[in-house]
Image 1 (cartoon, rainbow, N blue to C red):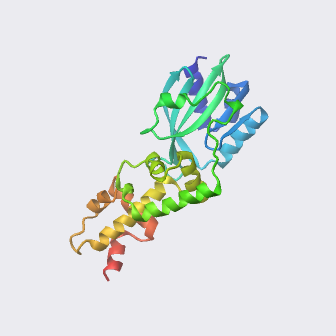
Image 2: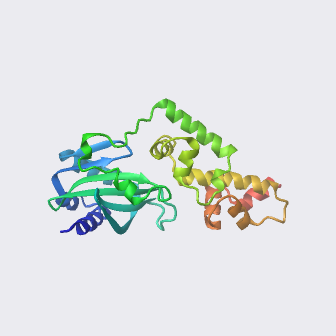
Image 3: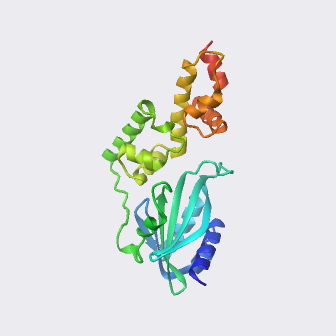
Length: 259
């Protein structure tokens, strides 16, 4: 098999959560590097790691099969979605895996979180090494002090900033506003705050929309305009986020507020 065929088969097996199929594609000395946790596993631990990942996974993945061959390996880009998001509307994060091949088998798999607006495929490939197991490429290094600062900044931005009103707002832009890495931001949002970037931003936009509804004179409210001014890409996302944030519809909210 050539490198592109190996990458295709790897994606098919991953989509089917076929650990045995993945094992057949792996070199006996293969290793897997998770950049989020700064972990590298190999040998018998790699099989256990893959099985545990599939058992615990609450997401599904849309793979871009326009694989890119680079001197450092084959790059596979993908989008991750929550299982409930069956239509693939709001990606939780963008990812890339870089495979290196030896003797017709996968020697290394390096998994990275990315933002397509900020990270080019070739830049991602440069993060992967033929033997990445020798060191941590992106150790998490998130202590309590840094975590607390990120959470305080998130709280401040959610009430004092209009950065979320940009419809093209990305997790990289949010990390830049806070002054932290994307991986640290993901950890605080998903692990410590038990939410996601998309949900957090939509809640901020919904709260901003509620302030607009309070200020607009009765009888002149155009919800589609309010949604657009609040940074929502469409009216459906606006209604869903408003209901999720306030436990009521925008229409009912207005009736209660003006009663």
